[in-house]
Image (cartoon, rainbow over all chains, first blue to last red; front, side, top):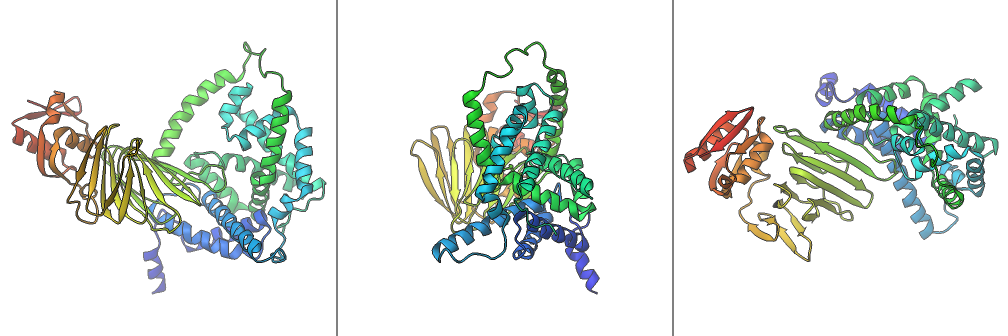
Length: 180
Length: 327
């Protein structure tokens, strides 16, 4: 009889079935661990993310389940960090999670130096593309128009630039936590 | 192993760029989902690169480097006016994507967000003759009438909807700290947990009706009102008319009818134009000023036209795919 109850809950055709949600939850856990390095909160965030997705899926069509899930998780992570920071400001400086946090790693002086050095060494065109895309949030098309290159080329520069940054961090020994 | 990881990072980087665009078409969305499901290492690579790409420190580093460049830079692209390989390609691209963008907006994507971390942005549109219910992540719902366009922006500290055209009924989830506001271009409505209808009849005329709670309306130039449940307001340029007798749980149009109370025919026609599959036109603008009272079933435009014609001794006909009302 349980299966028939589940069928009533499910939205055929629109939302993934239960096993589909399990896959989403697992992926979000992995995402949170890789994104934040926080193993302690990954389960909670994944659960809350799926709950919100199920709710949204009841009433509207979702383009990419995972893209939406990761964004919800991003928002929850940010909320949580803000709350923790407030708490630790109020209580005392000693009170902090023992878990290594990706944000803390990327927040270090060393990471900033690595970013700066990497950007300075990059071909100027690539740096310009990264600044326009990440900082000014221009579309690939408008960047391409301004710099007289194709949008495909813009995309390549962005991809390449991200890899450059990732490699630079790795080579400098800045530990990207969350690698299982 | 090393080079395989390398490949995955490249793919992840490409996806991060694609998924941070404001609109993705359905095919790309499905492809992304498949890629994520295929291999657990995909999520991990995507997550790590996201952390780098979204980090506040990268933002600052880019800003600092951007400033040094701007200070030392020669004018860019001054000598390549006659050779721009991007141009022809760009023209083709613009046409194709403009169409796709509209299609994606109309049918595919519920929630579209800006690449900024905290901001959730979405745009929704309904064609003439169709309604749609949109559920927001905060628990509020928006019921859109036909021919309506809205843009939603939700941040951790604010909830904002721009009603760009048409009419919508808002059922707002109460939050103590975060307000909810609707901007119609002329008037702006701010609320705590309430239910209310906003009708942008045209650029000039905006109607607000409150079904639950308390709403504050700001029409600019220091003109502000507080409307309790059961009341409403019609702002038309400089003219303001207060409305009474707003009853029921939600507006009549959500059930397919409209209650006119000394309402100009033009307003009734504007409302019909949201629900009718065919446009309704007046042969003479003066007809729009005639007043009508009664309960009209707006999802049956022919019946409504029959009724108006009977009240004012007019006639109507079908002409070139439209209904035309005339003397």
